[in-house]
View 1 (cartoon, one colour):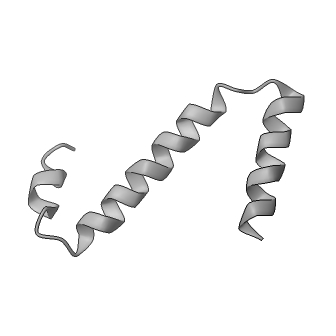
View 2: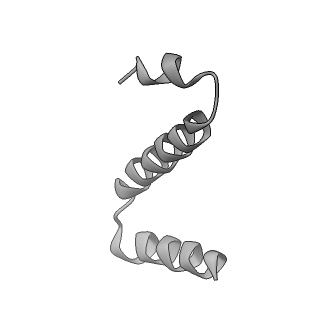
View 3: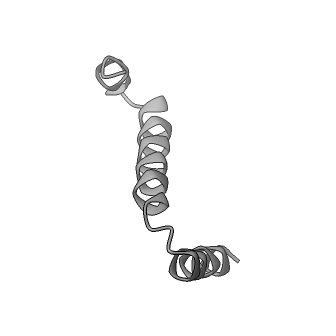
Length: 51
């Protein structure tokens, strides 16, 4: 299921020539992953000072 979504998104980028969306999406995914990881971590106070 998840691979189908990624495949469909890449097809959308290829057909519509909207490659500028990809870096935004990657950044948002990395930021979300970092916040989820830091939620229960001892690194949380240090990461939250970046924002």
